[in-house]
Image 1: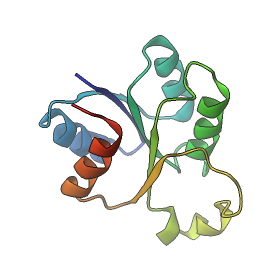
Image 2: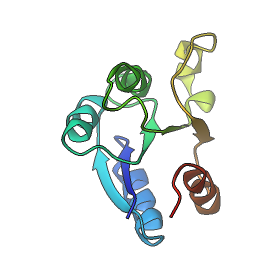
Image 3: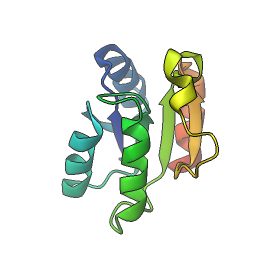
Length: 125
C-alpha cells in the first residue's frame, strides 16, 4: 500500500484529504509543519508528499521542498504542492522565478477527482 504524507496546517483540509486517499487504498500520514514533516519522513520515507506552501511561515512548504531536494534519502520522493497562495495577499511573496523542486501543482480548493488523478500519476497501484 502506497504511503502518502499530507503536510498542511489546516486540520479540515488534512482530514478531508485523508478520507479521500484512504477510501482509495492509500496509507496516509500527516504533519502540520515543514519541520514535523521532515522528522516524520526521515523515520519513514513516504512514496509521495502532498505539501502546502503556507503553514507556520508563509513559505514553509517551499523551504521543505528544498530541504527534501538536498537530502539524499528524500530527494527522489515526488512532491505535489497544494496551495491557495495565488489567491492570497501573500501571493507576491511567492518566488515565481526561482527553481522550486516539486513535481506537480494543485490549486486549492482541490476537487477529489483531480487529487486522485494527480496522485495516480506518481503512484502506481
